[in-house]
Image (cartoon, rainbow, N blue to C red; front, side, top):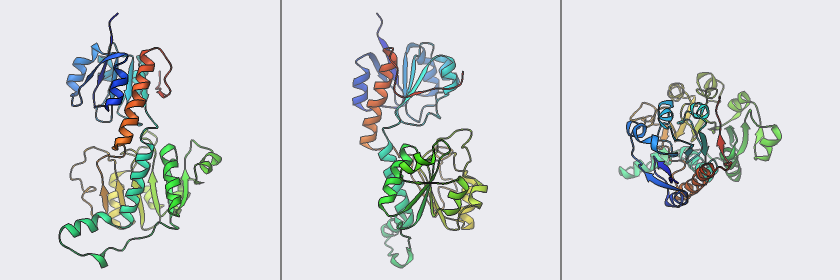
Length: 316
């Protein structure tokens, strides 16, 4: 019997590779191009990716032997799930792996923004002493609004509460009781926009959420609001955010994700009131190890004819 073959396109921790090797021959090509992927994919039964590789319909059509596509991480917006579903290819992910890491980064961005830590550090490295020029704000008693309160949003809620923040959340997919169980007060989106001192976005990028935080949303916010997003680029309308920063409506923004990645020296990235990080929410040793193990288990389950824990389905 011919042994199954797995292609890892974006790198995977050794623990995950070892699990995959129990059932298949594993090839790792972390810098593979789209053209190379299309040419090589027909020989593989499984493809494992992170966020770099775009698994388009063209790629999926080339995977004539594919049984499963594994996304090491949460978001599957880089995979054409509908095309995979039509072909009968399972799409699986590892939604629990990065919860703590992303929640901790979110809190780190909130603190860095509220106390202007990057500006202070940069000034020190230039020999400047900006003691009187750095006037931050406390988190204590401030209202944090969470746009979506899934696993990561709930983890942020608990951590923000420890700082004495008042946490409210909007999530159209959860009941008020579910939101309360996640340590947040339920509200409408408009209510959240109007009341929050800090707004943290945790929505996936879908056709419904694209541009959700745009010009009309900014108009409903408090003057001096601060925006955080470590979810997906595109949920925040970057042009509208830049305008709100320039007008003073938004006092600061801290972003780990962007509409186009990498964004280069865009006006938003270069804005003095913006803290930017290069999509590193899940970039911790612990999260990468958990993600590699979880996605390897999911891929193996499909290859062995078992039902995976985290199957992502599309339209047929």
